[in-house]
Amino acid sequence: MNNLKFIASFFKKFSKFINNLLEKNLNKLNVDNFKSLLINNKIFLSIVALIVLFLSYLSFPNIHNKEEVATEIKKNLKNKLNLEFNFQEDLDYKFLPRPHFTSNNSSINFKEDKITDIKKVKVYVSLENLFSLKNIKLNHVILEEANFNLNKENYNFFYNLLDGNFNDFKFEILNSNVFYRSLENEVLFINNIRNAKYYFDPKEIKNMFDANNEIFNLPYSIKIFNDKIEKTIHSLINIESLRLKIDNQTSYDDTNYLGLSEINLINAKSLFEYQLNDNSFEFKFFDKIQNPEFSYVGKFNFKPFYSNITGNTNKLDLTPLFSSNAIIKELLKTEILNNKNVDFNLIVAGNNIKEFDDFKSVLLKSKIQEGLVDIDQSKITWKNNIDFEFLDSLIFVKEGKLILDSNVEISINNSNELYKFLLTPKNLRKKISKVDVNFTYLFDEKNIKIKSIRIDGKTLEKSKYSFEDILLKENNLQNKIYFKNLLNEVIKNYAG
Image (spheres, rainbow, N blue to C red):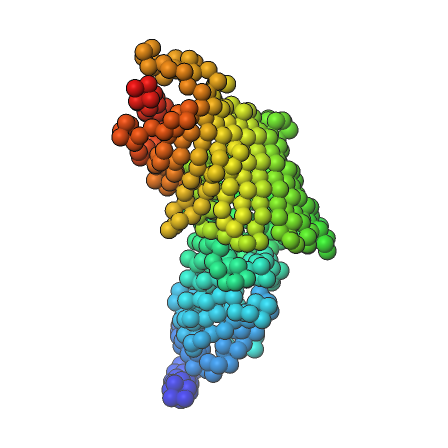
């Protein structure tokens, strides 16, 4: 109230000053000084107008009640985004670098449920109709350090925002996190939003979503738009660290989604066809042109949940499981699959392993139940002479570490060929048919812990070999030499 009295008093005194000034000038008015008077007063009055505008600009929050301002802004946000904003603290008006309101500790309701906590909201308003509360115009909203909580019931929150009104309006999210939770409120995984924005693209004549994110320590960018006239969704995902781009187009109706993704990984291109409805998700993943032997087909049934995936490929790539920032490894560590209702089966056959051409006829069998990955009966052949089969093998998470605990049965078809490869001295070349190794592998440390070794039914005493922990190197050639030496030590101790 005091501020309003001050402003009124200022304008009264200022008006009196202008009137006196004009009186003095008009009394002296003649033909010679008329032009000069007009020019000087025009400059002066322009400066006065700017001062008045600036003072009014500063006084905006004092003209209106803060609760009324908050109510009007929430109505605007509801119309623009179809979201219910809740400001826990009073809106704070700032005039630099342009007029905007800020509020700390706010939240958003989506489908009548609180979906996010926001540390700071910035609401920028247009200079147009700035002093008319009913006609106030929002042109930019920024959320900073927000935490979104999504689950099966509201997973489509970010997609639904594409239905907003972004004509002359932009919506941004900075330095925020998305927590994807189970219906029991357990965190399944976290997606970090570095920066994301919704806006209207006049060239495409569509609303756009553009974001830079990070998931499982893997930075990626995503761009999405929805063509409601053609009923198609177009998205582009780019993971630079993997040199991976996914260009996806999906057509939809009331019950089904049909999609095709073009996947470019380094210099390879493959296609991913899929169909989604309320009950299932079916797909085919293939590359007819560059690698016709590569194909995966699968189905996910939702009620009840189960899945089956089978695949064939020329070279099986295991880096998504074993590399330093392997996405499958990081996914398993989140324990997202620790659910009694998860029933997942995967069978993949390959001619060999990428970067390990000596390994042939790969058969990977995996079954996931209650968070445990069972890889029993997975097989691989080395140089057509040695067969490996995994038995009693589980991949699991313990104290935040991903672990493989396994027994490997090694059948040696021609021990002489093995000895030639190892350059084993002839006096130690005793015939060997079968080796059983029980070990534990720590994925992050790249460490193999040998528990026991049996050769043709005879268990070697640990005191007879010097290694128990095997630390893998980054260089495959170093590992090859390392294993040669270790195997020769085992053979030497067995031959006695």
